[in-house]
Length: 231
Ligand code: C5P
Image 1 (cartoon, rainbow, N blue to C red):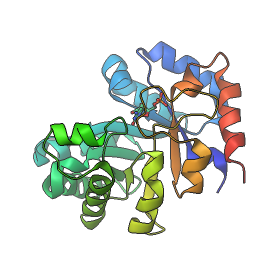
Image 2: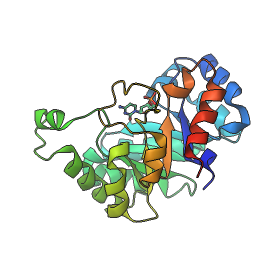
Image 3: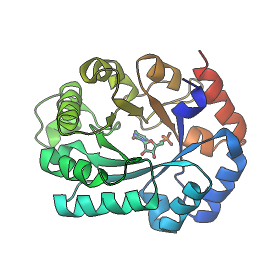
Image 4: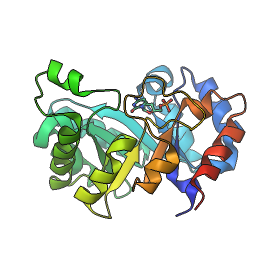
């Protein structure tokens, strides 16, 4: 696969202007962006529409965890915006996740991805909220649930990718945020890995944020990530 299409840049910006500058700087090289709660709340759906209008794939990271009726409505709204991917929390269980999957059926280009365990969470954090299983078991449990109810894939940390690929088979999307470039410190990522390691372990895509967007020269940083994925 062309490495460029495996990289999704997280546009974690606090304004439309800041997002526009980054998209301009990355230009044709970058074809896919993750829009999360920060940019969506700051700039509204017009920021998403502008990316779609430029031919960019948008991963709308809504991290839905709501009653099924509300989840379905949010997924339909995402589909109407023309985004390619939307996220729902696997922790919501089959009722919430399948509401997202059903709502997405009206939008053939829209894929629903389940969040398993947020990459900053540790076994101790799970124990704190009454989840007896460790992160590894919980990731697999939620991924299998998501696949059973029809999700197109999962979001998971670099270190969970190999087990997930073997559990979910070759067709599932496995999208990996929380990646750390080999020259960075791991920041708050509890289970980091490089983009290269994530793809080598079987991830379909990696999400790269600050390593590109906060770089002195984002276009050069993007090219470095792409080069690191070259076969
Ligand atoms: O850390 P970075 O800036 O690359 O984060 C990019 C995206 O990855 C964020 O928008 C966040 O949703 C996700 N992320 C994550 N777990 C982390 C750190 C970031 O899922 N520990």
